[in-house]
Amino acid sequence: MSQEQVLEFAGKCPIALEAACKHMGWKWLGLKEHRVYVRRIHGYGMEIPGFDYTVVVDAITGKLRIDEDDVRRTPSNQKKLDKFRVAYYEAVAGATCEAANATMTRTVLADGSIELDIHVGGGIVASGQEPPSIGGTSAPTL
Image 1 (cartoon, rainbow, N blue to C red):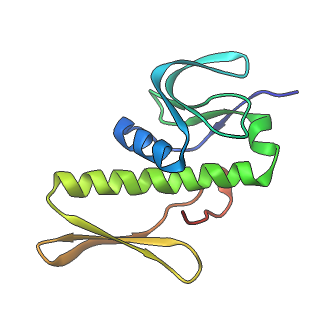
Image 2 (spheres, rainbow, N blue to C red; image 1 turned 60 degrees about the horizontal axis):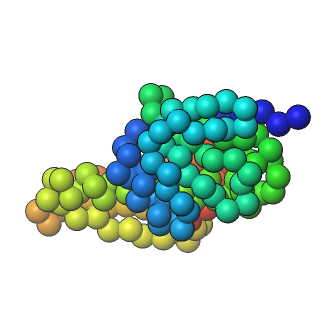
């Protein structure tokens, strides 16, 4: 029997959520009450191809709320969520750089992960690889 699953995620920036959703080619539904299996969740909704229910980022906690069967149905569904997570964090970094008059360089590493370098005034002020994936599997690149 299907039920709602809550996945660890720190999605609290609506601009970055929308940008990541659109980057993935998904339909952005915005902030409102969305249905996830039998519950109604107030948050930022997305329609993802291959998912029966709307995927929602909870407006208060930033956690991902999703129908459990949508995640388990096929390994490619988990990969879609992992790619979304990477796109989200890139969008947050990009927005932060823009606000700080900085630039960002994206490098795909040999293992397929990405590294973002943030540059201010000609020097690198921050550098890091992508965070752990949603649900605990390794994260693919975009």
